[in-house]
Image 1: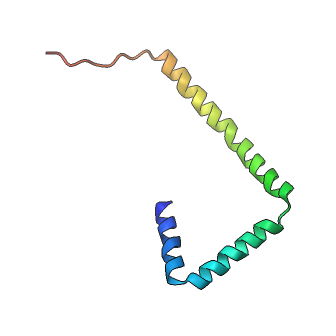
Image 2: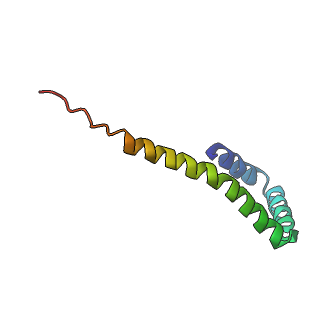
Length: 76
């Protein structure tokens, strides 16, 4: 992610006019989309990701509660 961000910054520094045109075009495209479409897409993707995330957190917590592991202490 950082490398992509660095590449985008480098592109904007090399080609500022093109970067402004791309940003304007993307902004215009997002602005033309109906709010319902954008909100619906975000909520659909969020709901699709929420179930596996909650399941994995629940499994992690269950393992943590059932495995009562005490930390090893070094012997003197």
